[in-house]
Amino acid sequence: MAKQTPTLPFDLAEAMKCLAGRDERLGRLIDTAPAFQLASEEARSPYEALLRSITYQSISGRAAATIFGRIKALGGDGRVPTPEEMLKLRTPTLRKAGLSGAKILAMKDLARKTLAGVVPTLDEARAMSDEELVARLVSVRGIGVWSVEMFLIFRLGRPDVLPIHDLGVRKGC
Image 1 (cartoon, rainbow, N blue to C red):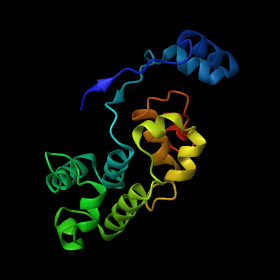
Image 2 (tube, rainbow, N blue to C red):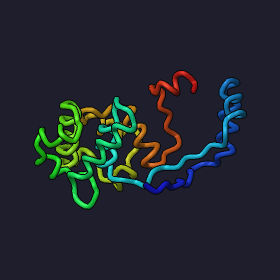
Image 3 (cartoon, helix red, strand yellow):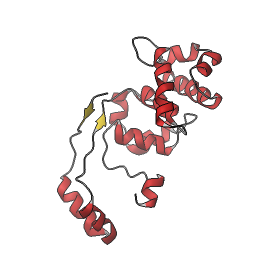
């Protein structure tokens, strides 16, 4: 997947200076940390990005990559199954790909809500506020605030999202 460097809607040097001046501890971390870089993955549809997110939840990256590869094999042209295709896939087929029952239910709900327009298109998502996206996407089974925040950062390239519930952020890592 190609990486893109999003154009920041602010002066990065000024933002870092402002943050460093607001909190002494954060300032020390900024001084010692490598330069800030934000590379977002080539934008996928919110449906595909969230399908991947569901797959990767609570398992190792290696296992998730294998399972996600199997899911993509169920779609056409190496892409994940469309929402319509996902709804037609039977539970035993998805289980054989390595998905748990809870993840299957989450993926089916994601597909239904994509078709119903609850999950926006990529263009719609780009035009929505962070708050609007969180409100809509957390209505999907298996998608929480953290998953939406990761979508905002790594798929939409929004650098001003601070996932305060992330364990690494909370520990200061």
